[in-house]
Length: 311
Image (cartoon, rainbow, N blue to C red):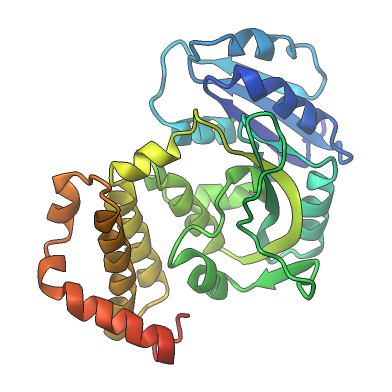
């Protein structure tokens, strides 16, 4: 049997309201050389019944229903990847949905550019009902090309050092072979595991950014991210990712000071907004009490003069 070119993984937890639209948006793709792997992490809702209704669909190669919650969406990612047979992987989050040409655009560009390991698109932000909302994280202009290609180091510096430039897994297709060369530390993260995961993939080759909104990123009250950020996980896990990217880029001590200043600025902003952070955040950054103003000054100075060449 000929292996599919793409393995599409849908890791679900408690998203019965959005699951059918998610699955159907994959099955209706104009590009059809794919398998579909459906995973459920012991959802308490009726997700299992919805997944089982696709059991006989010819595109569905696996349906795996956990009897116990794994506690980590990233463990589900890994499970899906281990089951996959495709050359490329699309982790299609269970509450999002896609334009009919999402796979056609991403896969065709990857196939024509063998040095590239990731292709990702922009995202249309939608509400619980799937309607567009006034929120734009891509900010394309009239002069933005249809797609842009970055060398690995350039992408890590411009898109992954300060924050996670690949903000939604559903907008990404990547080469599966890169998964086997990536560190598995992302599985231990609760909030920033995707950031670390994309860094691990992007460090292995060129990255294609498709400047079209071919993914629909749903914003709803059942998301984990806002609560996780309030718990300080950005600072507990995010700085570990930033430090790792800094090492990959071999940043100088001055450049690292600039990066630290950016972290301090965000920490200071959180405290001013009365975001309650756990004490272990401050335990992790004992140097902040001493270097807070110095780091902030260096970062602010560098934002103007860009001596670090990081901005």
